[in-house]
Figure 1 (cartoon, rainbow, N blue to C red):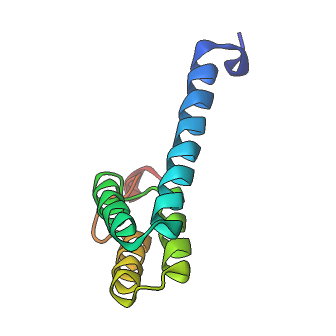
Figure 2 (figure 1 turned 30 degrees about the vertical axis):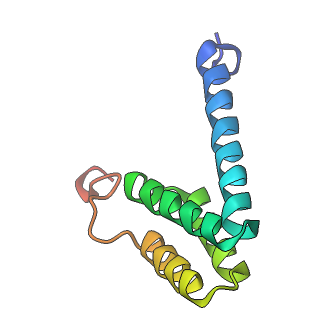
Length: 100
């Protein structure tokens, strides 16, 4: 049995689709909604970033939202969060140097 034919592959496809839809919908609120809604979406993105510091799609969304933002304070917050997600700090690497 190949992976592409099994239930794991189907589950993986569902999860990937869900991630894409979450980012797309969150991005719509973060980029195009009225300011109070954009601020609430920012708080959600900030919480998601804390839970998942290595989520490339979320980091990309932050970059896009920072470019489009018109409110100076929210733009600054987006840029700061975007920079911190690009370099997550002193976290453990995914693989230790000894096993590489």
